[in-house]
Image 1 (cartoon, one colour):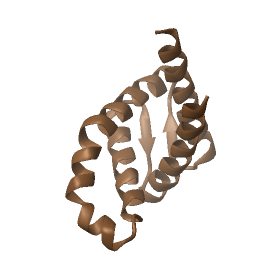
Image 2: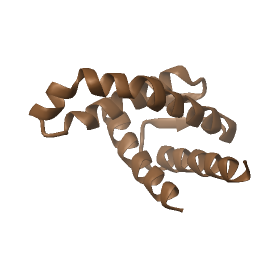
Image 3: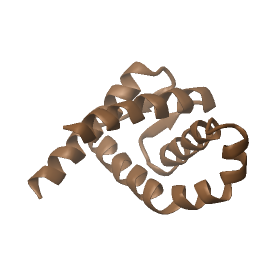
Amino acid sequence: MIRLLIRWILYAAGLIFTAWIIPGIEINTFWTAMFACVIIALINTFIKPVLNLITLPINIITIGLFSLILNALLFMLAGWITPGVEIDGFLSALLGSVVFSVCSLIISKL
């Protein structure tokens, strides 16, 4: 249970780091980042697998590059759902999703 809480805090810190690095992404408070992490986890658990299945032909044609667009759109959706998170445009969402994915990869290896 403690390990889950520590990971959740690290993911929130990674999201704040992403907002600090990428212009166009704003997060009001640390608690907002914690809530946004829950929203991102729910989106990645329930919505992303369905969208991956639906967009599989496009993903095959683009050799997997459409996954970046899908991740950016889901990142924008999380920002739209979460109060206190502002994502200005698609480019900010695309860069933010890449940076947050790298942060998540590093955190998952810990």
